[in-house]
Length: 281
Ligand code: NAI
Image 1: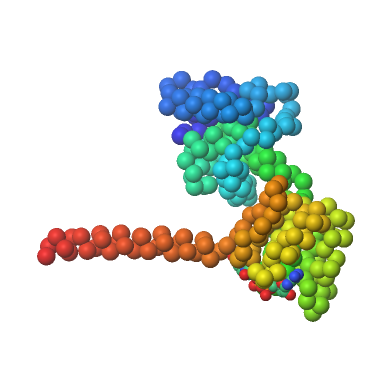
Image 2 (image 1 turned 180 degrees about the vertical axis):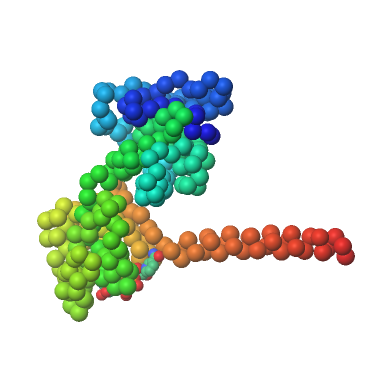
């Protein structure tokens, strides 16, 4: 889609719709369908801004999970654009950077009340704000990492979380030899302090970077202390009560998926090479 088909202007106020460009029926129909679908889901934010200021609208709480999963990808692409000094971006350009098609991108962003500006696209800085706000990243989330081994240390030493809305409150370990070591901006503390730290820092997100055998007990402890979201790196399926969010990260699964695609590509290449040779035979 060309940027000319963007439907509204942040300059006019976020979420304000304007008529689609004449002669751009495909996008018009596409956008109408998107709008209808979102409206049908009861999730459309007001077409007109509530006031002239960038609105702090309450989210209807109905952003689909698949859209939520793509928002961080858009955010990463937007950060890259912002770092390059790009002020506005067309939806097809942003979609390409994020690896999705532009209709999906526009639909996703419509859940946030963001429709871009006709002929220009989306204001990068404002879209960063909108996506960050949707993801709850306009505040700094305190995070606790349990396990200061290879992985926990790498996570704690990574400086990028702060600019993405996360603050490492503490890194905990059961090994006294680790306690007192400085990792990034924090000092490793003993895991016996977990409850006190979670309560004192209002930690909502716990990262599990302990061996698999200790993961469930660590999870139970984090939850009992008041943590409601878990990022689990240990290769186990955690049992948690309803209302707790668990995200599992498994790099070996990602590698296995890449291996599958690499294998398929190589089979296709082999087929292409073998094809003409076989035909000549
Ligand atoms: P590691 O052995 O280097 O570190 C584990 C740390 O946890 C140690 O410092 C140990 O003292 C501490 N620990 C053990 N029990 C504990 C407890 N009950 N409370 C607090 N601390 C405790 O292991 P590494 O390489 O850092 O891996 C950590 C976990 O992450 C493992 O479960 C591993 O399988 C997993 N992993 C997952 C990856 C993924 O892609 N999901 C990639 C790499 C590791």
